[in-house]
Image 1 (cartoon, rainbow, N blue to C red):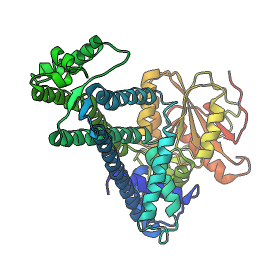
Image 2 (cartoon, one colour):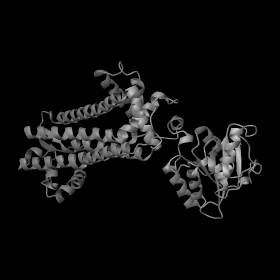
Image 3 (tube, rainbow, N blue to C red):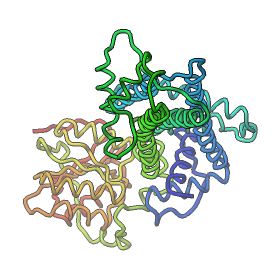
Image 4 (cartoon, rainbow, N blue to C red):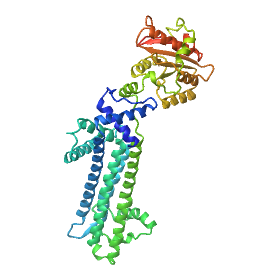
Length: 479
């Protein structure tokens, strides 16, 4: 199972469990990263939910849908081209064929480009709905898994929203659009080749409001590239002889037919088919890269809850430096909470940091942060977010830093190491904001933890007056 398949499985598990992840899938997750732990749990959960066959079935449906769509557009292109030659006069208006196949293709490219560059307009809702309707029909024509899989309908809806909307929809639908046009033009080209190989037709032009000079100019434009490649294409004399009045009287008619056929196939291939094929392959590989880079949104409430199940605060640290002698160290430090700052003043533009906060406490920290800073509050939950914090500190070089932490989290050497990295400048001031849900007064267990934090903070030269404790929405004064 590749990385994308594993992450997609985790997302399907999330969709099944909604907002309440199950804690029944016991295993050792402590040595893994959060994403690794989620993927390991997803594989264990699949032993119960049995959704991998459903995912594979849905992916197969998409492949069949693409194949069926391609086949239909090849037939449509072939049928459109064959209708042009089923005439009693055995004459073919070259410029009409060109405009019929190339001009709509160019116009659709312009429309697609405008939609693709404007993300607000590009919804492709109607294409998505049509695609989903066809896929649903294909599903009904095959043996469904819905009788065996109770989550089939939910997974069906989730997978196609994931594939054709916000995650990869822009690339997938662009690929589908270029694939359809490629097949249409390919069918038209093959049909014309077979018909011209078995039928003799004269290429003509006719008009009511245009002049002969107009067709001469258009032919010069179309024959510029073929002439560079030394292909046999019509010249100005051939254009004059292709007039409906002169076509039957022209000499060396077979050579003229061959030159017009060369130009027709060159135009269909190089001005129509080739650009579409290149774009189709480009977006096919772009969609594939997007799938390989698909990441889980760990800020979702589901994953925040799952993190607390897989890697509880008491047994994890995003810095792997556990303090096995924590209790003895804390016991040897004489600490007091009498001097901690109940009404801590935090200067404006202080840089905020959060350390392994749950979603509830992260919301509480964000409310507190809004009063003194517009900076984004980064929650350090893994090495990537820790590196992001260190990069921001190196770039912004703030003088003051506010660190939000859950009072229930045990302060260890990992925390101490991280704070030391944040406190490289000797004149930098760090404030500690402890978050909790209960009063300290009269709570001996909470009081002990608070003393531990004050003791640990003193080891990195953070005085007690720069530490405060917030309960829910407790108000704090600011400068």
